[in-house]
Amino acid sequence: MGEENKMRKIIGDFDMKLAEIYADLIDECVSGAVNLRQKFNGEHVVLFPGIHVVKHPHPGDREQFPARLNGLVREFEIGRGLDNIGLNVPRMHLVGVNDSEIPFLIMDRLNLTNLWDLNSQQRKEAQKQYFEQIDLAKNEGYFPGDVGDAADPYNCGFDVNKKKLFFYDFTDWRMN
Ligand SMILES: Nc1ncnc2c1ncn2[C@@H]1O[C@H](COP(=O)(O)OP(=O)(O)O)[C@@H](O)[C@H]1O
Ligand SMILES: [Mg+2]
Image (cartoon, rainbow, N blue to C red; front, side, top):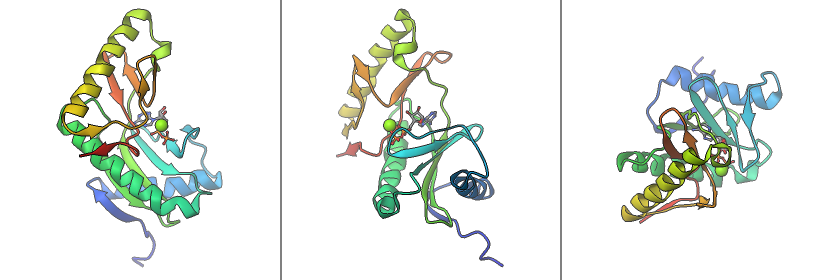
């Protein structure tokens, strides 16, 4: 006993019961026992259990896990920092390592539309906010990562209900 769940918390504060459920869910999705809606076109797999997002490296990239763990911790810290200066970003909850040694990040789930799927009025608003948010981040000492440009924005999306542009994916952002 006590050995049952070997999930390790690296940083953050979150309901640990739920964190353990998500840690196990990663393995269940990897094995195919559970088929959850997920995205995996980039460097990470992103799972959508309810109101949260669980982001982890591709399970085959074992040799990359230490670097990916660092990246997720950076994403957590940058995300919290951006949140504190008033940028629209998902709330960061926890970085952990599950019992298969897979690092993962738990954050809030956003409800976003790609900028090219918006109507022209919404897209105009989104592009305006894109510049405002990038300026704000730079003025506060952040170096945005892979955000594309206003013509082809990357790692951001527009919440049409809140009428707000949100950024995500901070693994390659830097801070002064
Ligand atoms: N907090 C979130 N809420 C909703 N969708 C998200 C969230 N984070 C990521 N996603 C979705 O998952 C995709 C991949 O996530 P991302 O953080 O960009 O990982 P990668 O490192 O693979 O690019 C995003 O393009 C987005 O569609
Ligand atoms: Mg991305």
